[in-house]
Length: 69
Image 1 (spheres, rainbow, N blue to C red):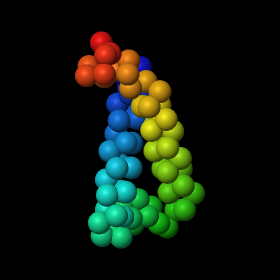
Image 2: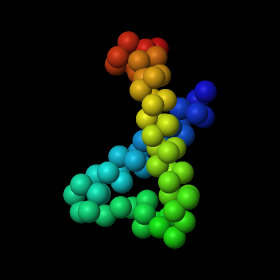
Image 3: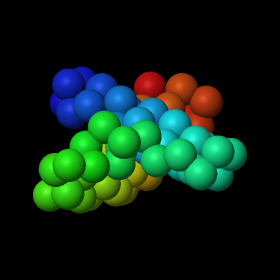
Image 4: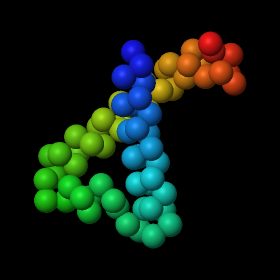
């Protein structure tokens, strides 16, 4: 489970960084890196969304501040 948590956490960083760059500079990092492979780009977005749902669902159990372990 720790590996899944770390992958989800990394994907959240990627998604957060990408949205920050879009908001501040109108620069889509994922599109810039994977723009020539739209299927892979879409897969990255789906994985970021799935990681977000996973972290939301498991956050309280993992978070030391919110009453987890």
